[in-house]
Image 1 (cartoon, rainbow, N blue to C red):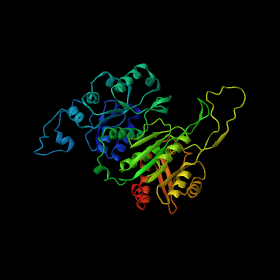
Image 2 (image 1 turned 30 degrees about the vertical axis):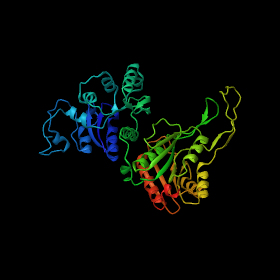
Image 3 (image 1 turned 90 degrees about the vertical axis):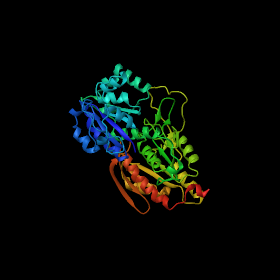
Image 4 (image 1 turned 135 degrees about the horizontal axis):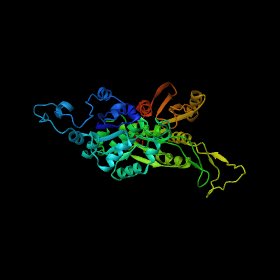
Length: 434
């Protein structure tokens, strides 16, 4: 799909760049690795060379080689056999420059126009979009010099993938660890997608979901107690965003209803931002008319404060009692709407996020709400479910159950959409029912 230059700079997070590389390739992209001298102290160039099947660039001083030799374009008539200046040749061909991990040193070079190695020279020479995934000590990240450099790059249009929080290689606990590879890959893909020309109708009909309209919900809802406090959950929106992105990649017209999240949504046809369960209910019911499928991946609050205080509730020594009432059941109302239409569409997909008796509760929920499929998800484990880059689920229909083992949420989304396509294959296109 696109040629991406993956810059790898010197930090302990360099080993994760290998997974970033594989993730980009799984999305159909071609990768050329550019490593700083320090990066090679953490990961050997041969690792990236084996994965990318391209020579890894570690120096700007090696002799220029014929372009055809580097890119497999040999042709007597092409005129591409001559040697050229490698950083200029790559700068002209790449669709994205991604640096992961990106150290404070590299950020400083980019911000101040210092070109003393291949990576920094490539940055100055390319007109492709630039995406940086910082990784460094907490104090380094917060230092005013680093923050000033970041602000300078942001002002130029450089995009960043926010570093995560947790244990750092230095032994500290705080913000500065490299973002999860799956999040970096998703950010790169979104940036490439947003920069592409709009698809023509001919291109859209080639997708396996071309002509279909899919509604996806994602993220949590926040139920306000007063002007400051709210009741919420730890849903990050990653699973729903991955589903919306995958449906779009398959050619569907996608509407995404998203609760409050820290991640940027994928480049789909329509994005509706909401905060509360009531707002999500209204947005979903309004958008569901005429769609072929609804995938309710959002973690919608089951309860909301009965009364919301306009200002901030003053703190006292006395206990505070908050009365909660049930929110509207979006899936149940979608089922009722489907019954009223007198047809089998739209296909309804729900999620069951549980911590105990996961499959039993999911089966009961699917039957009770008359869903075509429910995705059972054990959210008690740290490496799956809420606010994790990976997931392990069970896909439950009336006739079958399929275990999807632990893997990136993007890969899980592919498996879910495979099943959605099967369910849709027996249903007429929504537009044909009008």
